[in-house]
Amino acid sequence: MPSDPLVAQHVLEFPGGYTRTTGPVIGRFLSELRARRIVGVRTAEGRVLVPPLEYDPATGEPVTGEYVEVGPAGTVTASAWVDEPLDGHPLDRPFAWALIELDGADTALVHAVDAGNPKALAPGARVWPVWSDRPTGHITDLAHFVPEVTRITSGVRVEYRLQAGGALRVFLEGIARGVFLGSRCDQCEKVYVPLRRSCPECGGAIQETREISDTGTITTFAINNLPDPRAPEVPFVSAYILLDGADIPMIALIGGVPAHEVRQGMRVRAVWVPESERTASMANIRWFAPTGEPDVELS
Amino acid sequence: MRDVAIVAFAQTRHTDHDTGLSEHELIQPVINEVKERTGLKRFGFTCSGSCDYLAGAPFSFVSALDALAAWPPISESHVEMDGAWALYEAWVRLQHGDIDSALVYGFGKSSLGDLRTIMTLQLDPYYLAPLGLDQLSYAALQAAALGAERKELDEIVRRSRADGRGNPYAFDLPDPEGDDLAVRPLRKADVPPITDGAAAIVLATGDLAGRLHPNPAWIRGIAHRTEPHYLGMRDLARSASAADAARAAGVGKGPVEVAELHAQFPHEEIILRRALELGGDTVINPSGGPLAANPVMATGLIRIGEAARRVHDGTARRAVAHAASGPCLQQNLVTVLEA
Image (tube, rainbow over all chains, first blue to last red):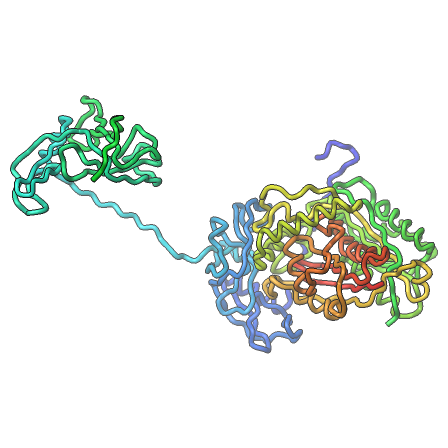
């Protein structure tokens, strides 16, 4: 209450509300709402007014006695967004006011839409009514509208058991020791890392296994701005690294350098996790960091 | 038709807060001012416009009569609308031919309550009022239906406030800054200032008008039109009733040098310029308009007074005034004034 004794609060109120008769047309509309139906009234010219009026606003003629069920869905023609609802509003969270042309109607209904966010209700958006739990024959029997269902979210989760055998097992055993293992095809004279037992170029078998240096050169890279659980932060850089002595680059994270300083030809070295934390996994390599050597001219 | 002219206009220095003056204390100075200017003590007819819901008291306009000198009894009427419609009623009354002067006034204190929700009470009680649809919400719906460029809206607010700073009766509002949102797409800067104030006008016919003012502002056309109340029954992007009223008043019969428009929100100005077919040569709201001072129930009458003032001081030979009532420009009154 105001502290100035000459300032008073004044309330204008009709205790219990103000009773009004509805007349036959509005009364029919509200009775249909109570039965969870939305009707319009047809004018002499054949238009359907929703909500119904007793007279056609276009001509002044009395409307016909024909009631037409409309909706329940409709199309938004304009909307306004309320960030801070008032006490008297239909919703207590941010919502939209909308002009809604219900299916089968020639005019628009004004109502609230629980749209979630202000961009969800462009003109043309489809909305459906949410009914109050206990309709009583009042415009608020339509509690509010909600956007039409246009998408769903479905969960996907399947579990597998993966086993590294063959060449991958040999390679990962090397990683567990802190060593990159590769192999050379005698026929094609190419060194592959990770190690493999068949040459993807000639299809011949590869017998040899050799240790490859953990230093190399960035041949190309990408700056990623979407978070990834395997990356330390955003943005992060993933790069193709041609390890010294290998002919095929491998992909890895780059760290220890700002993303915008990474460049093609940059010399890098693998940063291994401490020996006590190592497993037979690529997680042993935290990332590749610059060695500080001069850049290499890429052919 | 009898020739009727505006021969005097006065308005309060509007306030953005309640000064505690009663309504008759608010209007008495402007009534006295137009009486002094014209030398008239009594009028053939008196008509006022106000809204009881602003004060929250029934028949609150009756006590305002204390400012008038209503004894011996006077011929008096009231509209529960902006004072511009009181002026229309007085103009009609003067057409009867038996009187030659009329006093018109409008007043309102919108600071006493929450204007935004008080305006909900003017809505139809079956379909709109129960939803709690408030003044800013329905104005925002109309702004969305129009879909005007933000730059154009900002420029209207900036121009209105700048002109208002040059008007001693309106507020000194700064250039709009920031993009604080009201009900989107409206921004807070698009919302007219809460205002308490009053205005009065004296109408006179024929020879009397010439004796009371050297440059009477003759009413060469005056008409009002309405359209359906329910917002969903009309195209909110245009104002058919304002266009009809403008045609009936003869706005297009000559060049319009100045137009005072009862546009409470910047998008309403765009809609009204189109409806009245006002070109780029017309100076819009040189007073600052409702965005610089909006004493509800006097704002429309002030538009007529401000337009008349341009004719009185010779800066315009032909001016147009517009007043609006109801949600989203439901009712529109257009007056054409000439030297």
